[in-house]
Amino acid sequence: MTSFIKTDSATRYLVAAFYKFVPLHDYQQIRAALQRHCEDLHLLGSILLAEEGVNGTVSGTEAAVECMFDYLRQDERFQDLHHKESWADKRPFHRMKVRLKKEIVSLGIPGVDPNRVVGEHIDPRDWNALISREDVRLIDTRNEYECNLGTFKGAEDPQTRTFREFPQWVSENLDPESDQQVAMFCTGGIRCEKATSYLLDQGFKNVFHLDGGILNYLENVDEQDSLWQGDCFVFDNRVSVDHDLAEGDFEVCPACRMPLSEEDRGSPLFELHVSCPRCHHRLTEKKRQGLLERSRQIKLAANRGERHIGVKPKSRKVDHKS
Image (tube, rainbow, N blue to C red; front, top):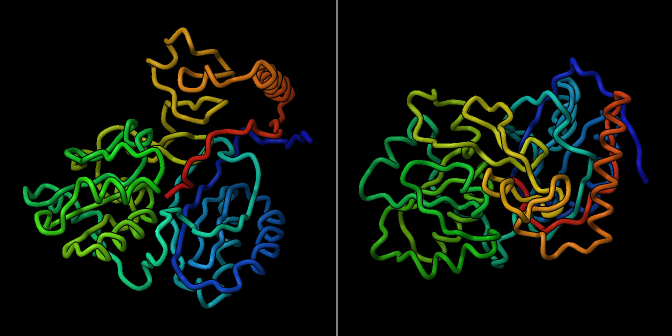
């Protein structure tokens, strides 16, 4: 079903990203009440609940977002829940969904528990000094399409398509005997919690990760001192943010939801509002027509001063934000 929401062009939306690894044996019972509370506050976004914790990004007015965190912190398990903030001029999500998962970030290795063992958190203000050391291997734990938009100077890109491929890359490329110092980073910190826990379980001794991830670094390190290069991919309609945490210039393919580069848009296999070179060959004519119709409805809604919310086209599954 398609619906429309009136929007105020002067409104700015607070985007809050958060996670916490904490035992939630009753996570299935939490979902319904949290979904209702977010809807009552007119929040949009996605929250994942699993037995290992919570992971989410929501957007709305500043007051509404703060009200949601007040609600969560009534549960003593979330009293120290922290979040990272950025702002958007447009709603970065289409709907609000609280979902149940086996993992709040999918590594696929049983027993990896950041509550039991985790790497050393490095404050963003100390990160430059660490990754500038010659004895430190710097690993970007994000997926290839994220790394392509931006990364830290000197970082290794494992070229993974999903986080579940990361353990195999570790087994083929890292050695606990020769790699004595390993530093890792991701968007918001959650993937590194799992990644550092996994490495420590594999016998690595000195494992570090950027506290709060790239988003925390961009918020706390001046651009003139920064070792970050490019934009940071985010898992919402903004696609990316720059060093000032403002919306970047990238777009995503409406069919497969992957970031579009200038090369992609210049390809003969690129079709505006439909597909990109990565997914062009997989698109049926029925789906192509559906995407064109969706684009037409979005334009009609915009002309009326409304925001179109419809059933999004099914897309290639990507890891939730980190």
